[in-house]
Image (cartoon, one colour):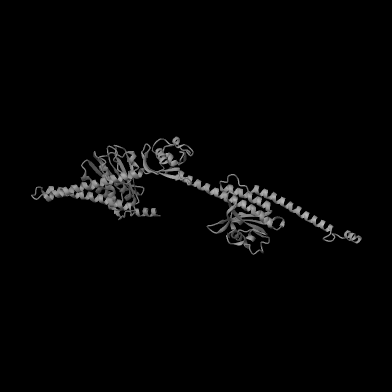
Amino acid sequence: MSDTVSDDRNGQNGPPDSPRGLRRELEHYRLVVEEMRRRIRSLEDELEAASTMAEVPSVVVTRPELRNTLGRLVKKVAMIIQAEKVLLLLHQPDTGSLDVLPPALGITEEQANAINIHADEGVSGWVFQNRESVVFNDALNDPRTLKHLVSLLAVRNGVCVPLVIKQRDEEERLVDERVIGVMHVFNKRFDEDFGNEDMRLLEMLAEQAAAVISNAQLYIQLTEAKEELEDAFESIHVGVIVVNREGVIRLLNPAAAGMLELRDGDYSGQAMCDALPPGQVRDLIEVTLDTGEERTVEISMGDDRRVYQAQTTLMKREDEGGVESVVAIFNDITEIRRVERMKTAFVSTVSHELRTPLTSIKGFISTLLEDDEGMYDEETRREFLIIINEECDRLTRLISDLLNISKIESGRGLELQLSDVDVGQLIRRVAANHQPYTKKHEIVAEASDDLEPIRADADKLTQILDNLVGNAVKYSPNGGTVRIVATNEDGTVRLDVIDQGLGIPERHREHIFQRFHQVDDDIDHRSISGTGIGLYLVQHLAHAHGGKVWLESSEVGEGSTFSLRLPKDPEKVIEQRAD
């Protein structure tokens, strides 16, 4: 007994199974447990800080705001993990690369721009492909690392974890997950190594970071798409009105406001019956809401009676199948209808213009053929033949005009046969050719003494002047002087055709060179027929020469002046236009 006591007192710990040895071992384990509890409390504090850090602002609506949020996030990650550098990489499906998502911490913009990693390269690629985290504490010698990036970023050690988006059901069960990239932390502070605890903590932070990135980017994409759509609706010339089934306006773009003569403003959220004036538009939307039937109609509105093609489309509820909203689209077709009316009038006029000389030709030829008894003397027969010849020329000019219009409309253009043309001689010939057709008018050609020959297509230049002089005579039913004046002007030749006729009302002046346009809705012009293609053709013939034609002046009741400017060498001008 005494020996045992003596041995126990002299020993340091006593035998392992002795009471004193057991007490010491229990004390050791108690200290270990206490240390573990301390570490757990420390981890809980860090997780609480991480949770606070990773909260997304209530609204992240712009890319700068997302960048600022991520800036705060990476700083907190660095603080919690005790890392010097933090880097986020996002997967780009179109290129298959992992691109830097700024901002990065401890990495310059130049370094970030130099990072080019494919989704199957290095530690980043392995983590992305396998969805598993990696800790490496010897970056330079670890076979998984990309050595040029280790050198570029001066990496000693690091942790790489996947950025995983997790979707859960109402009972918080995981139903789907998707990796969108990876998160890196590099260089543990105080020259320490990263451990598994760092990796698990970073995985928790990465899950929250992935949610921040995914939700914010989705929100930004939706916001930007919405803004683009709204900008498109604001800028298009087609009127758009969207009204829900309660009769509340969801969208009314500026084109629709202008169509309805409403003041500029935001009409979203207003009741349709309060915002829209009574009339065809409101009736159309109400009928579509009531019947649930899509409609297409034409309506006329405004003091100028503009014509709109109105079409309503139903937006239906996916769950119930009922009408959610009505989209009404209004397309201004005033010009289309105007051209259609002009085309109809053109066909009628051309038919008349063709029939008139043909009737005259047929009549005189029949008269000559039936004159078996020599009723008409030689002078009368010659007069008949002159009339027939003139009517044939009239038909030839009309058919030539129609053929040229056909070339213009088909995009084939007008081919020029250029030669040296004496403008003074040409205008005198045009005046002489037109004089026999009128007894009320005096047609005068005036050319300046210093005129030089120009390069032009003589036939087409004659056609231009024939149309201008013909119009001058036609729209001067009371007679008067028609002057063709040719002068030099700044290295070009200017031709003016001046009449003393009816003039052109102001509302027609900007349309006067449009095809099929006729000044026939004014009481003084209704008795004057025409095809409405003469001035349209004149404009294209002038342009083909590298020149231009315009209405210089016109006063109702005081005549008009049409002016033409031609270059002396059209080929140079045409080449410059092509360049």
